Amino acid sequence: MREATKGIIAMVATCTVWGLSGIYYKLLDHVPPIEILAHRTLWSCAFFAFVLLVQGRLHMLGRALAGRRSVLSIAFAALMISTNWFAFITSIHIGKAVEASLGYYIFPLVAVLLGALAFRERLGRAQLFAVGLALCAVVTLTLGLGVPPWIALVLASSFGLYGLVKKGLSVGPVVSVTAEVLLLSPIALTVLWYFHSGGNGAFAVNWRDSLMLAFSGILTGTPLILFSYATKRVTLATVGLVQYLNPTLQFLVATLIFLEPFSPWHGVAFAMIWTALAIYTVASLRQDRAARRAVPRV
Image 1 (cartoon, one colour):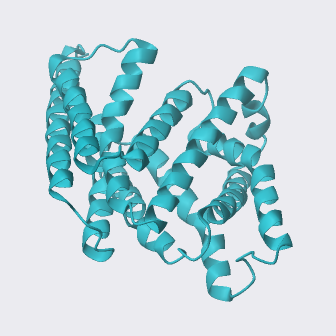
Image 2 (tube, helix red, strand yellow):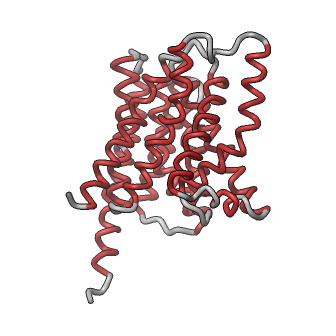
C-alpha cells in the first residue's frame, strides 16, 4: 500500500472519530461538562505520556517546557484547546451540536484570516470572498435567531488560535499536546477534588461512567496521532479536503440522531458557509497545483 493511501486512510479515520465523538459525550450528558473536561485532560496526559515513553521520547517534554517563551506559548495553547474541548462538550449537552458543526465548518476560513493577520500571508480574491461570505453567514444567523452563534464562534476562534500558536512551536504535535495537558493537570485535579469532596464525583460510582471517562483520554489521543501520521504522507490540500468530513458527520449526528432543530435561518447560513468553503477549496487546490508546477524538475 502506498504511503499516500495510508495517509488518506488515517485522515479519514481521524475525522470519522472526531465527527462521531458527539455521540460518545451525549452518553455522558448527566456528568457536568467541566468534570468530563477534567477527566479528558488527565487521562489524555496519561495516554500521551505512555506513547512518548514507548517511543523513547519522554525526555523531550523537558525541551518543550524549557524557557519562559516556550512555556507561555504552550500554556496559551493549553488554554485554547481546553476552551475548545469544553465548548464542544457543552454544545452536546445543551442541544447545540448543529452550532458546533457550524464552528468547525467556519474554522478553515478563520485559520486563513488569522494567517493573513499574524504571518502576512497573502489572500487571493477568491479566498477573501470566501472569508467575507462566512462573515455574512454569521451575521445572517445572528439576525435570524436574535443571538450570535457563540458556540460556533468560540470553537472556530479557539481552534484557530490554537493552530496559530502550534505553528510557532519547535516540538512535534504529540510532545506539545502532552506538555499542554500536563500544564492543565493541576487544574483538572482541583476540579475533580471539588466534585469528589462534595460526594458528587461521577468516577467510581458505576463501571460504565468510570470506563467512559477513562477512555476519553484514548478517544482524544488516538485521532491526534493518526492526524500527525496522515499530515506527513499527504498534501495539505488533501488534509484540508478530508477535514470537512468532521463537521459533516457532526451535522448529520446533530440533525439525524440528536434531532436538533434546523431552522430556515440555519439553512441560509449553512448554504453560505458551504459555498464559501467550496470557493476557498477550489482556490486552494488551484494555488497548490500552481505551486507544484512552479517547482523546477531535476
